[in-house]
Image (cartoon, rainbow, N blue to C red; front, side, top):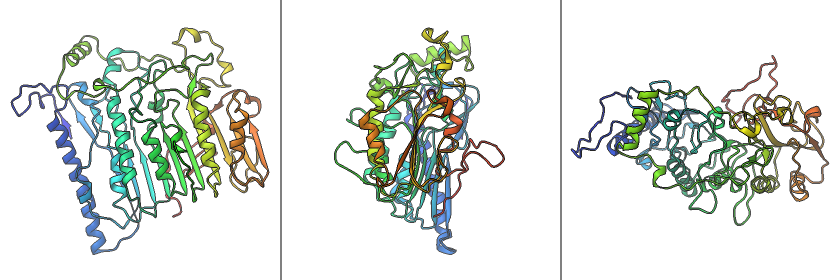
Length: 491
């Protein structure tokens, strides 16, 4: 799909509204229709193959749409999602056992004449319910959550804006679809990455507010819906912005009778806009999310604000390579994090066949643009503070692969619990909950930190081995696997 400089400057209805910068409702509808035609064609073709040949065992991968845009930079980052229209009309496909939705490429709309179109998350549900023999659900999507980029240039920040209202609606609508969906009983594995690419989810200005994508609900519907999805799984790997209802409902109890392996990578911001982590001196502890209003949505016609920013880049250009180092949140914020950890421990204790559990947050320390940290001793943070860092907890049941290369045994007769939490320690109640994970008649051995780095954050490379489906580090040739293997598990 291409878009040139002359496209859609005036509505065809003669209203006189300008659409040099913004997409009109007709354009958005046309994109949805084209996307729907493509999905319908794929499903119709596979249905014909099933009827004429055999059902087989197929993996269906759907990539996000990327378009060439030779027009106003506003059109390179519109924010609106692609929707599947009339999903109920799709035929059922019994041959598809693995469904994959992923961003094939991540376009840099500030430096390239291309734009990645975000997919409506409901597509995951709409397609899943049409695959009665689905066993493995995967996605690798840049969902977006309204963060402020760490780019210093005001123009580049403006044209990188992620519209918080669309982010919230996308999460809430997915939750609504899960609550009413009849998921296939064969679904047992899920690898869902809603922070893709992770580097973009980290390159944010942590001094700025993030949106409250929960309100008007009292808890995050998106997190709660993922919990519902997980209750029939055997293996789950998840990267997400989530709150405690990902693990435990606001009311009642829950169990996971089949779940054997779980790995949760959580963003350091929460859906409510509170942060799970603060600065070394407590900075940012009371930060709260900003309210989503009508201004949190992109306009459907050009505005005077658009004209201002168009003139700004004509005069000043875009400088996307100039960044501000304002990434300072590396210390747990107990008020927000402890309820999250408590819910995880309660959930893990309700998984009777659990073999391994990983819960960790990727952290970054680059705070030189903050006055208080201009001369801060980075060695207090980590042994290698300039490298990507992480904070987390790991559990392994007896006779299960241990958290190598940390202290402990590869395969132990005991339960093993690793606290890779630098100087932070759980209170007695929280620690007791974690100690209840697994068979309590079996000895539990706990490990704190990593040898000489026990009181400091660990290098993230070690945490990257916390994968359920991909190859575990270390690689037999000493090569770290930082990407996706996307290997089919045994079904």
